[in-house]
Image (cartoon, rainbow, N blue to C red; front, side, top):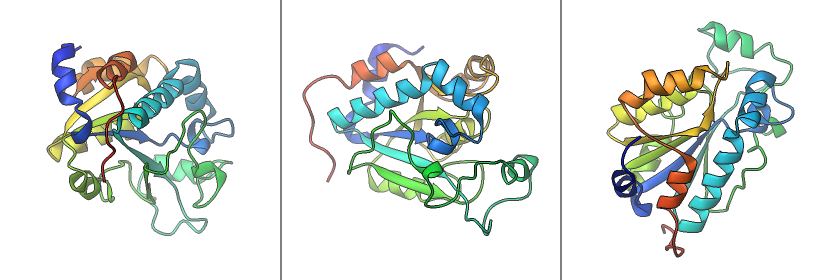
Length: 216
């Protein structure tokens, strides 16, 4: 873990964005297409911690950006070039555009000032999406990464953020993957090499204090 002072500098509200990755009902909610992942996100406290971080960001003027993965009912524009995509297309719950499956999952609260970016393709919330130009227009320097899964989308988001020049902060107790023991191994052996690793309590402590002015 980095020193609290270093984390405090990285998490200055005007230049920080909180990213939630695929925290949608069809992934981590009760009607998930991936029940094992949903159960792990719930039992580990990761989903609850994402909600805590979102609430803290709302209270302190930190911009929140929700990255949602979805597909059209006809599948147009979505990948078919990996086993993961082909398996997802056969799941009983589909992440169809406009359906309940692609709404943010409770207990995460979506505020009017939050930005939701939806993608039809790929493995990363950043690659080939509007996220990077949006972050630059917001003046973002630090991207706080939360959500699922530690297996695929979260590491993709972290690597892409670092490659694009952002400082990445991974909130260790606000991400989840399967099996449950894989997440700390991924953090320890991979993500800690390229990102600052923090806990929900540490990030919330950095954002404590009087409400700041929200970005225009």
